Image 1 (cartoon, rainbow, N blue to C red):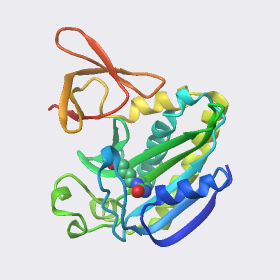
Image 2 (image 1 turned 90 degrees about the horizontal axis):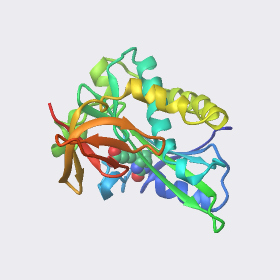
Image 3 (image 1 turned 90 degrees about the vertical axis):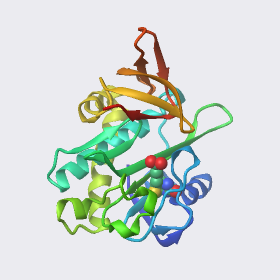
Length: 248
Ligand code: BTN
């Protein structure tokens, strides 16, 4: 994957701009970066607060794989970003919470939002992976409702990395893992994901639109990126959407 950076001071959302670039035929490896976003998007149609000081970017991919496996791209991104951040900040404390939140001591330091588009013939036209990392934000940069649930990396580790440095490290890890994944398949992601996550074997509430729809223990993750949750009656259900809160 050849990386081609497109840098902007301000965008509505790097995901929206990436879709526009992808539709115009931008090659795999095109990366859209913005210093800040005015309409940053989160999962579940939430707003993603994106002031200056955070790293906001989206990677365009065109994997020629069976579309049923494209959700693995999100897991891939989670693994690549954790690896890069763990190395850079010399820590083992950053974990992945299913499907793709990166947590530091239970607080969110990164979110990932992917989308994909199929061709008329059912193959993948493009996939985009939007990644937001709280690199150098102060508590007052976060909206009040996020101050207890979000954390900033530089402040947490007493470092001064720029967003550009963090981006370079993430893209390097991403490109290596992406190539391995294309050549070797799911296990290069699923095995490391299992080691880096804080979700497997935990008791969780599964939520859809803030409503609890199931509760139980996460017993597995499958190749489509779905988690299998078993309740106290021994019934299992798989979930490939929604989100979970971990019960302590
Ligand atoms: C989440 O809700 O956890 C996902 C957040 C994803 C945010 C990133 S920031 C860069 C890219 N552009 C967006 O509008 N969203 C993603």
